[in-house]
Image 1 (spheres, rainbow, N blue to C red):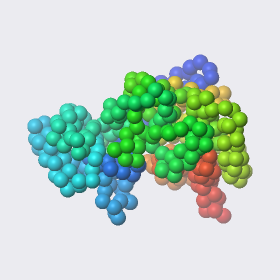
Image 2 (image 1 turned 60 degrees about the vertical axis):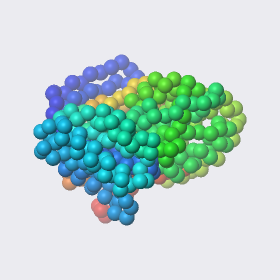
Image 3 (image 1 turned 120 degrees about the horizontal axis):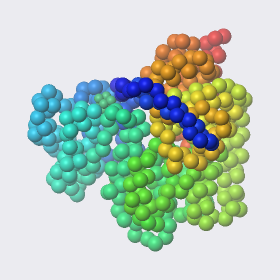
Image 4 (image 1 turned 45 degrees about the vertical axis):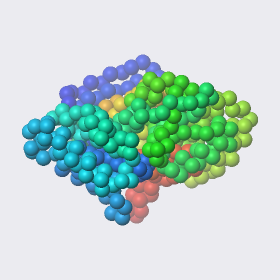
Length: 429
Ligand code: SF4
């Protein structure tokens, strides 16, 4: 289901250089935060996500994660019926009954997330209180937390932010006076393994990850924690970590050769890694990644791309596409612009880039149609109509499901943008 937010007229505001931004506040076409369950349930292997929502919510995650036919799923929906909507006492009793049944049937669950939805928020069902109440019953065997995945004023990657932020109060205190590096944001296991090897070679020592692969291995946190965001959509999580005394290391995001190098460099500088060591460790990876990117640069250089606001990855992607693949940015939309977290990225964008924060989908579609870009990056809801109009599209959600971070994935990331153009060229022939 799309989250449709009826809004008021467009307000276009220009700000001072270097990044004038158009702001729009109209109807949006985005998925809701429940979508994050699709990748989070694969990442935290002993967690279960119980959506407290409607049949629509159940359909959304069931179809988004429809690949789960061979495994016992680790997500479900407690469907709110009419009687739940009529009286809160019923809804709480029903929820307790479902959770008790679930935990009895699935003794492998160590961490249970109660995930709020539009319907649970509309009737003001207090899931934080429910999580506390149920924790008293099921702790210490099962930890029960809650967060919101609702589509009211959110985009789909905020589900991960809300989930990770809910984990922060559960992190144990860091029991060492030595600085420790924490990588924040869900990454594919293969990427995580490559990064561990890289940090090891740099001599940074043991690195922790949030989210962890297992809820029994939660990273410790404290004033000696220095963290690097691996994803650009984690504003609440970063704030919660900073409230625990941790320090964010400002950096671009690890997309492409340049982004990965700058991201690793931020950690290397913070941990006193010598320049010669940094160069000797990263140089072979960089050289290989640059070589792997070359054929894609040939295909993509000079092509015009339009990014609709959807995943919140748009700004780091735009930086990669323009600087490493020489693509021309027609418009770069982002649902929200976190100026602080994206400061290092914004510096690397072309000075005249057309940036849009928020969305008024009809106006944006008009601009896109007028520009006739070679490639449009957008949500599923816009892709089909635009393809029918003869435009070539890339689903932005694919960028969240695919391992794209780090040196070894730089060419795979470029390939994601080259593929639809190659496919379209074949169709034309
Ligand atoms: S949480 Fe809201 S937007 Fe998401 S599927 Fe449920 S009703 Fe739709």
